[in-house]
Image 1 (cartoon, helix red, strand yellow):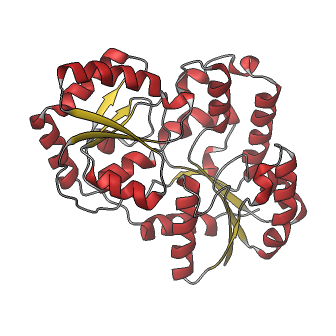
Image 2 (cartoon, one colour):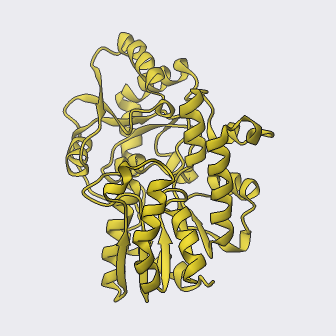
Length: 336
């Protein structure tokens, strides 16, 4: 089988799609499949629409070569691939790891809306022209997908009625979760990592940590935006991680923390399975008081050690080889 992986970013760039593309390419090739990558280069500097067209034209030979296509996002690569498959009839599956429309709206308006609140009745009327275009094109892309693969049933349940997704064409493929033990941290350093954007809720985090620091003087907070190899080293040396975003669909940061045995605080608006969510502390991202209380709570060594023990005892780990097999199964069952 000839598989084309369509991704907006690829290593050395960092981010969820880049990590997925790299690992899946390696695992697919280990299983004897031919794999090519269609990603953005210089054209990412072009205006929206123009760069989509250039990506479409660049990808056409690879689409023609392929037998199955896996898209790792809905808009930057999904829309061009959907149009390319109008020319060359190829089945494509899409992995849904985030919500681009919600991100656009929240970053434009700075409304503190978690994803479930965003899709309340009448949401479409609140969108501007660009966001309405994104919604319509995304709906078109999903309607043509042979398989829509969610990382979590949380977003599947939100998106399916909104985008009119056929339930018979959906499946859950959970994130990879591997284990790598690290010694206990030498100091109580909480770690945050991600893009510096409104939906990450860092202003609330700063204020909550400032208040917590008045009660617990030996805690520290660091903000991290570095390449993945350095990120994993810093994560391994940290005390705990904290991710109080307005929403997190499939937070790789939390999976990485668990893989290294690190307790965590995460927004309650998340797509983590209940067993994983229970390994950390869940917080209301709209409440400074709740976030402050959870920081103080996790600073307590009794609570911390209990969470750390629970993570170390957790048995439901998923190597990339297993994740790749799940994708292979879904690709093999996808048809035009």
